[in-house]
Image (cartoon, rainbow, N blue to C red; front, side, top):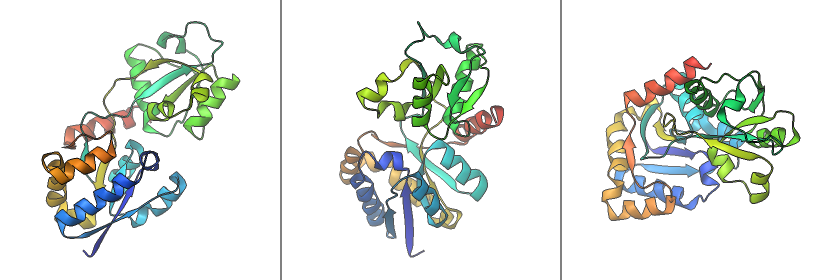
Length: 244
């Protein structure tokens, strides 16, 4: 193995790519194999390059596909960080509550795992929406609810958090999930299986190493890495299967 090609979810590099570049350098130094960080301009660019990537920090949907369809091995995830959703309503809807979605048309991106997390949360509240109005992006969900084409919407929490004040004011956010079922994680291609334990150990011990802590500080939201367990993956598989 002469080189590892490392790709990162564009939503995370949008906050700053330098920390991920330094992470690649850190792993290179510790592993003794060159790790080349490939920056993606957007998700279209990211997905186009995935076939050439041997190490990927992916969101739940992309990670799940890599694991299920191409045999990638999930290694580590950020401690305490989960992918959650917010429920939003058109500003003209009075006093929206989770129960308000009963039988209602709800805008969302149907194919992505955050939608399944939202449906799981709603089921716990004994709420079953009517039609799911499929949108091509989370921003389209915001626009759809603002325009009144659907009175309610499901939006990935990170997308909502990154909106400008103007964007947030287009809708009324009234509920946040706390399911702790889905997460971003580092996955490696089957071709790196022989190096699995070494790569995993590098990530798991970063917070105990001065150089590793410096890189984690640059990544801002990640304080340490923890191993992805079989139970973690089984929970995600169950959610995907239940709300397919």
